[in-house]
Structure formats: C-alpha cells, structure tokens
Length: 89
Image (cartoon, rainbow, N blue to C red; front, side, top):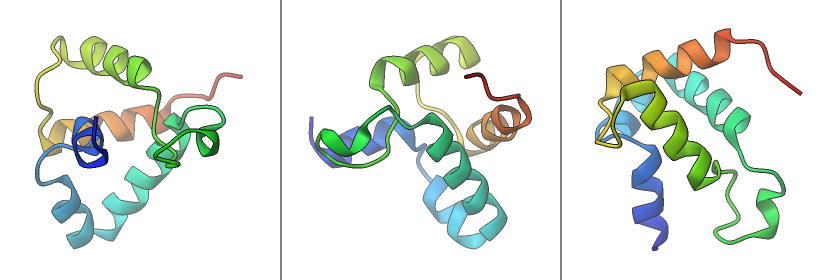
C-alpha cells in the first residue's frame, strides 16, 4: 500500500484544510496522532508515528459502526473524546 493511500485511511477528506485554518484543531489532531502511534514506529517504513492499521480499524468500527469514510466533524469529535479519556498503561 502506498504512503498516500495509507494516510488517507487516517484522515477524512477536508481534515487537513480544516486543521490549517484552525490551529487549535491542528494541535488537537497532533496530540491524538501521537497518542495513537504504534510502538517502535521508527523501525518500520514509512517511518511515521501512525497507528497500527488493525488498531485503527478497530477504533473506527467501534466508534462509527462501519469502516466507511469519516467526516471532518466526526473525526474531530472522536479526537476530543479520546483526549478526554485517561491514558492506560
């Protein structure tokens, strides 16, 4: 799977434009991305702190009931909710 296609799995269409227009949303998304990163992400190409694809699919399906495309508002709402939850170790 190419890098662009892989990133599309994590970002709904229009989310990047929204994040650039609203710096608070960009900070929120960066915090959530860092929280969801897979362990030892630097050891595997594409060498980006992306979540494990299986974990991401689980989160999408349990949050939205489908693996369809997320919309921007739902993604931001899910990000806010995620950061409001205590971190498990």
